[in-house]
Length: 224
Image (cartoon, rainbow, N blue to C red; front, side):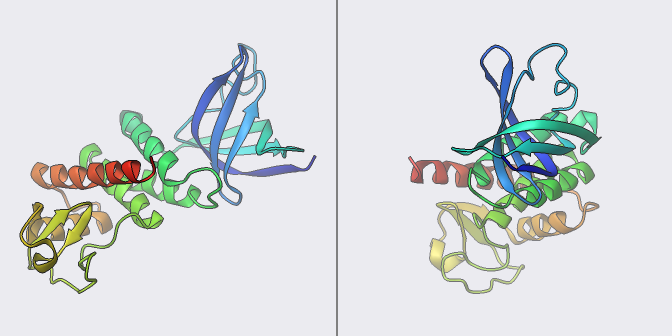
């Protein structure tokens, strides 16, 4: 069986039997993979201190003869990617990344890496929203703030738009229905994505969180 090595981000670790873990991992060059970490739950396992979420990891694993789950051989924990006080917000990013980059997808590592960097540079509340939005944008779940997602027409940043059925729509397409997204809100969200020094007021962060929540809900309903 062939051995592989790569940089990795741990999405989640699930108990398997009394002593092992099943790992879901985003790798830099191999996409999302699943691995069995045999004996990782034992007190003296060399994996215990290294298998940490929200850290830059380097792993080595053995590919499976059959099926899709490989076997972890070695893991080195290199550095944390978030400050300690933002670790809880980081867990939210891992949960969203697990949905946005499912099994079989050959993306996710750089998108999550960049999202963690975005969160690290911004206040926790607005930074979490900005980081999740970046991953959604990279996954094709959402569009930009400068076009109507229905008719694709460019909308000037001085105009109000509406969030309706998980789409950012112009006045004509939305017919003045849905959640109002003012010109000031749109400008602030766009600027906050690109400049960590731009702060968001709470009401804009709340609108952004509602846009994110409704989009994930819509995708959940669609794939039932």
